[in-house]
Length: 208
Ligand SMILES: O=C(O)CCC(=O)C(=O)O
Ligand SMILES: [Fe+2]
Image (tube, rainbow, N blue to C red):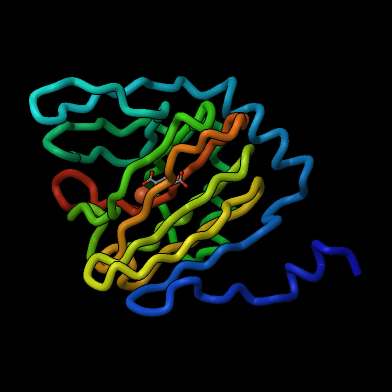
């Protein structure tokens, strides 16, 4: 039996001790497909440098991002028109849908260029994601550590997200837990992450 078979035969366990569900699926596609997807995403996606306003100052978000969706949506007052999924992302969405048993109409991509890039504590709890969103998060490239912190109890859970893995968050997770990817002083390479979501379209009509 190969290591891959061993992982595949073990049902993923819930990483969270209470108030939500987080499952890490490893080796979700043939490794050659994962390697190719990583290269194509790094070079083929038009990555944006977003600027955030923090206490009156403009700060570059410490990672590159991109967004695609079948539907338009409004987030923090900013209108995002529908923007069709690039060809490279279509099979990745299908995989995420099959593994998560849910449908997704939007994707947020993150490109962490090195250990100085990060995402700070937040929950994916915007109204447009609905009550208990299923979020499926694909990782390619450098392994990064992902932290959960319970909003009330302060409980912490950490998990390393390897190349070719899928983290599924669902149930009450976003109500009760924040998550982050901290910076690291280690000399590391780039990582690409795709978080698939189901967003209620602007105007409130679900058409997927
Ligand atoms: O890069 C990751 O694994 C997490 C990204 C994230 O939390 C987000 O985009 O909301
Ligand atoms: Fe998130």
